[in-house]
Image 1 (tube, rainbow, N blue to C red):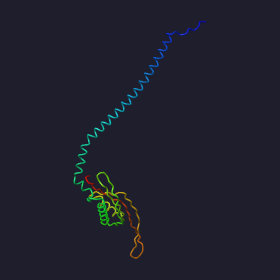
Image 2 (image 1 turned 45 degrees about the horizontal axis):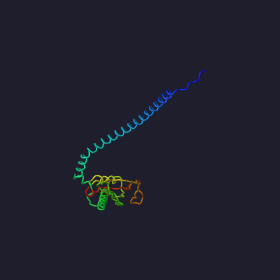
Image 3 (image 1 turned 180 degrees about the vertical axis):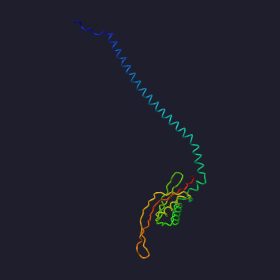
Image 4 (image 1 turned 180 degrees about the horizontal axis):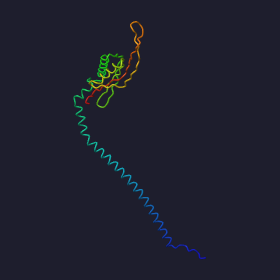
Length: 199
């Protein structure tokens, strides 16, 4: 039996060099993958930012025509007629109460109450409203709503709450009639807009 010979210095150095070469290759691949991943990340971010920049440039280009349209609308006298004519919210609320009362009386309904609502600032306008409680039949309700929403200045009816009750009337002889009539009690808000100073 021959004794195993131990490797010489040349073989050991060759193995060590091979090991170092393999480790350097693995390290290079790892660093390369990390750099490629970062490159892709920054490339995607750059593309997103370029897309956003293009969107903002398109918005900036359309700003001037939109401002011209807004200016022409603000100078249009027909638009001004759509605002309430009063100068202050309390006066406008009183005018709305009178308008609701006139619409209800013209339609043959009964106005039970009106109450001014707090004014609300909306952009370049002040929303002024009143809450009203009215009773009548379906035909009078239709006439009231049509009267309020079809004329100028523009008025808006919101939060419409209708309750229905059937009523049997008494005849002159004291007996109840054989027919019944529908009585509506309606609560709603009517609002319009006041143009603010400089608006």
